[in-house]
Length: 370
Image (cartoon, rainbow, N blue to C red; front, side, top):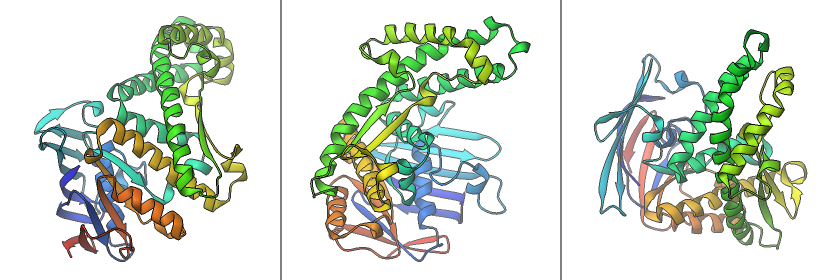
């Protein structure tokens, strides 16, 4: 969990130090004061990405060239050991763990395990497949360190292959297909892990149905692989999937040249979200989709707790309670407050959080314990 965070030149914070409680931390203030910015800083310290923008320049305080984040992460499972994380980002990104520079994001990401509940989560249900792939990737990077390494290697090879496919006359076939072995090796690994995770997530989400759809409706999810026909019957045999993937890339080379991109692979995967067997994105109301997104988040949280331990997880909550009725709000808060460290942002503290709360007042990019 996050014990302390120091923020410099990030969004509307010039310099801010915050010491957090291991239970519930409530950031209270009017809109536009910086509550969500603090949650975003915590998220970035965990995953080296924002949940609001892909534009790095948006994160840097006005008039500055770079921002710096520093965090102290305490592990109860490791005897209270403190891991010190540092990231600065401007013209280039610099990462440090316990004062030692690290070059690879995979050596840094998820030292702080972070679960998020955000207003934009509706897009997990209603948005494009890429949103759900990102949702899967973030969860899996926190669960399995080698997943991020495989994903980065796959994406780099895919980008290079696709660039050549756009102008195939300029490159010999052997030059383009030199990337096929990398795609097959890492793509097989990625999709097998995703399929296993999809099955576990479906079990966890179905259990959430009892809390968030108490009328008996069943929420379910199913992983739809971009190489599903290669996985059928051999999903546990990575070597076989690898070989079949490589063969299919070779077989479909001419089609890929015509289309200017690689059709087959993890970049085509999706996650089907259903309520009583019907696709939520097509048939669900906005309220049902919002509730389903929360249930998915709790499903991932349960899998994180099983592997990492409840005390190791920091949850950030950006005032998502307004859309919930009393029954679902109670289900949300009961699970949340029993699940480790919480950092909640809102204009007021809603009832139901209990008594063990550390409160902070947020105003104009300044935070004080309240």
